[in-house]
Image (cartoon, rainbow, N blue to C red; front, side):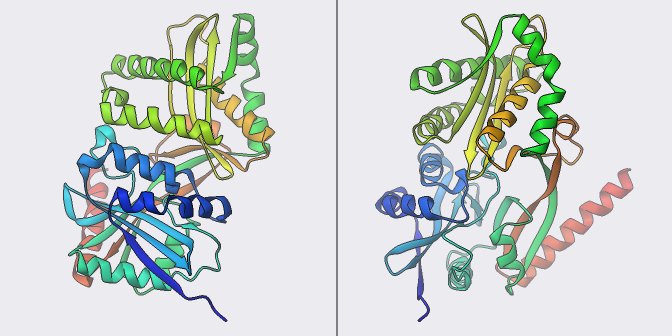
Length: 359
């Protein structure tokens, strides 16, 4: 006998906390999951970014009393006509950039037709024109679901994700950075990992300082200067550490932290999230490359599948030079009406024509 799936919509933090144990149970057993649809990430983001949230729109699917699927969306106060994936489309100076946006799902056997039907009816009920996801991988469940449905959908290539494949890509990167490791060793430098809350506090503060120095020197704003972004990450990093999902490596000389790589363990991958390093330190051992290599080595030791550089612009060269493979990243917009779909298609076409005229 087939299971009957029911869908419930979570609209606020109180309702989300009420299903915490079910959400965590789903994470433990899910075949498809990431750090960016975990309870810790979603609930912490909702707490720190509440000034920007009109309403949460978290779709949860249940098989009897068992939670089997989650799609975490929200409606922003700046755009009441569009629902977005949690941790995306905030103001650009505090955007958290949730990666690999997708369902959290127990298994591919879960029937998504019921939640998709509820999504469609909810869009009309809320007066939404669309649902937008900014960072979708080619193998995402949400992508295959909307492609096989009758939703009017626009799918646009926006960036590429660069990856170090494990083990072959990691071994190549480790060989490529052997000279840097030797130079760092001669200079009395060592690569360490954050393992305690005391380590985290010290290294996180160093990350803020080093990141700020680097970007200010280039004439850009430092994202950690934004209070909400900084405190969100300070809080989520503690939670990631407690669950074994923080992969924060740092380069130290004596008692001085001179480089930090803030990585996040997401399912079978380590994702590079932020960095900071002292470019003026002599000898310059390219701490960025050195720490990327160390993360790839750590991923290899843990038999993971990839070290992920996060999505980047289509003309990225630095990450491309270190990566062993890449994949396209899509923006997916699901439209409530055919008219908004046609207008969106026209805008995409117009942008392509404009690019051709410019170049």
